[in-house]
Length: 114
Image 1: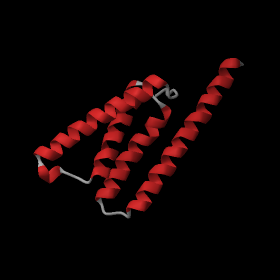
Image 2: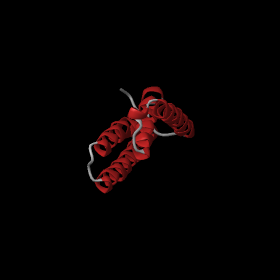
Image 3: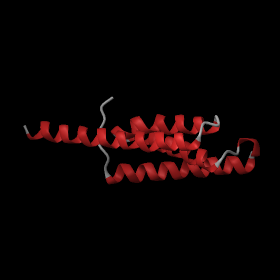
Image 4: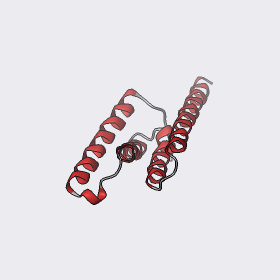
């Protein structure tokens, strides 16, 4: 799978996909109370859906990494893992994904100018 870097369009696509997923999850939680989870889990699941959609459509490098990260973090929060540990994992993992994307984009620019 060939990946590329973030753009304004890909970030807007992620935002719209995440908001749509959040709305669907919120409606499901309202109608089916047994599936209603903590707000942080709902947000992480929506962000994961946005990342998976963005990775599939725009092939953004960091979304390939952060989609599974957000999904795992949501599962860990549901599993009663210490929230501060989960959020630290999310912050560090997301930062690493963006740093790797930044390095990848610099590598591409260097190869294009050669």
